[in-house]
Image: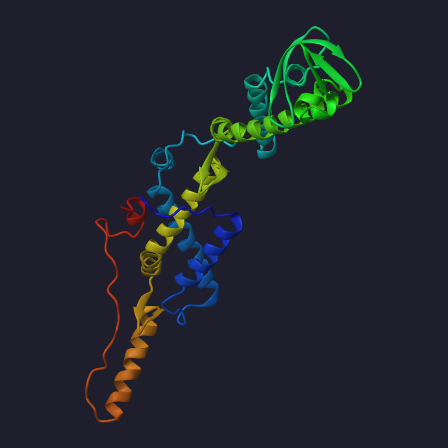
Length: 308
């Protein structure tokens, strides 16, 4: 069955029964005493619920919804599940990026922004885009001697000059580490987001949930909602039949769209006939008396014992 899913709360079910009770009073009951009408309504309600319960097999419904049976309440609440999901995804991120530590980035920074020392073999670039290569022979406050070339600090471009300045090198290293940590945080966040959907599905399903239109609801809530929906649909389908059987079974007949005892019907027919005769019409008044429903046994209860 492909009826749309509807989670019916207790209030909604009570509301549906209230509406159903109003429908069961049709046709009119002007010919029935108020106390007896109330008693008959209770009988109608009971027979209707009995018929509906016999028509719906919860195990079959669960199988159609691809749910285990019996359908149990969830083993965990949503806040517990969300905490578990976050913990697992974080652990997965820790494992994947285990080597991306502060120490690792600091090591890279020291390699990229190293301090040049005397006798190191280096290549430096001047501001005019020319290069000088060789062994550092002298490092002075105003110049650096590389091989036979004497290069003033003011001639060096920013990057090359940094290798001869401890303060600048420290700043460059710290900036590099900050940048790499920010990049890692963004990369890790994006990766964890791709993993979360699968982790979320696994943990929610294991805890007894099902996803409906993007929202996780408990399998029990989903199942109970479908049962309530099916019951309401069957109530609407059976209302008229149930009411008719109960009224006929208790000696009432339907006349002019009103339930009444046969004696009251006969009285109304006679009154209508007399009125017609007094007007000189001479025609027998038409009636709308319905024929009572029949069953194979002749007893209305058999219908509810075999609702199919």
